[in-house]
Length: 253
Image 1: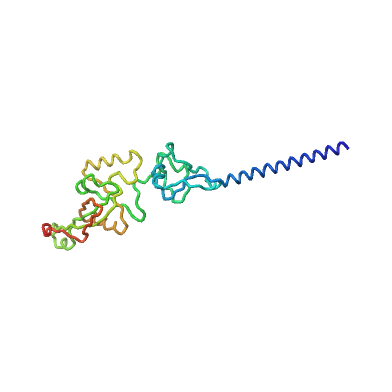
Image 2: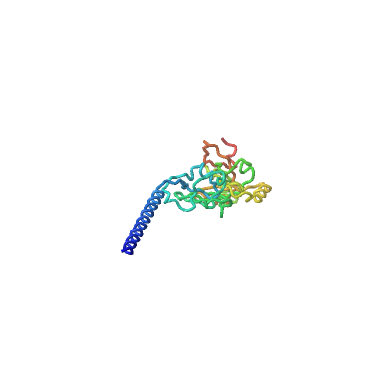
C-alpha cells in the first residue's frame, strides 16, 4: 500500500514539474515575442552614401537616417548610433539607398575609393589648361565654367590658310568635379599630392568636368583639334554659343 502511494505521489510530482516547465517555456516565449516586437533604432540609407563619406557627414546631409523597426528585424551588426567615436569613420564602399547601414561599412581607409564622384548618367573628361586658361586658381571643384574653342575651320584648312583661326563657345555650362587631384569627393589623406605639385610647376593643370555622353564627344573632339580656354561662369551668365570671332571680326562690334 505504501509503495503504491509513493508511486502515485512521484507521478504527481513529475506531472507538476512538467506543467511548470511548460509554463516557464511559454512565459519565456511570450517574453521573447514581445521583445521582438519592441521598436529598435537603426540607421537606414535614405539616399546612396558614396564611398569616402564620413558617418557624421552622411547623417548631417540626410543620406542616412535613424529609423525605428521591430527588434527582430534588426540585422546583426546594424549601426545604431553615430557619435564622436565613429562619426569620423568613412564609408568603405557605396551604401545603396534603402539598405540597413551596418557598422562594418565604415572604417578609416575606403577600399577602392573613387577619386571623383561622377553624376549619374554622365561621364568625366579631363582637360589640360594653362593657368590663364583656367582662370588661375579660381576654378575649383563645384565651379561652373564656359569652354571656348579656337580652331582652324575645315574650309580654311583645305585652302591652306592654317592661320585663319576662329573662336567660339564650345560648351556653355559645365560642372567641374576635380582640379588636379582635388575633387568633390576627397581621396584619402595624402593621396595625389605629388602629382598635383608636379602639375603646378609645369604651369598647367588638369580640370575634370562631368558631361552627358553626347556632349562629351564634342569636348573630346575639341581637345584633339583645337585650343581650349575656360572662363568661370557667373550664376546668371548667358553666353552666346553661336557667336563666332575671327581675325577679321575681332575688332568689330
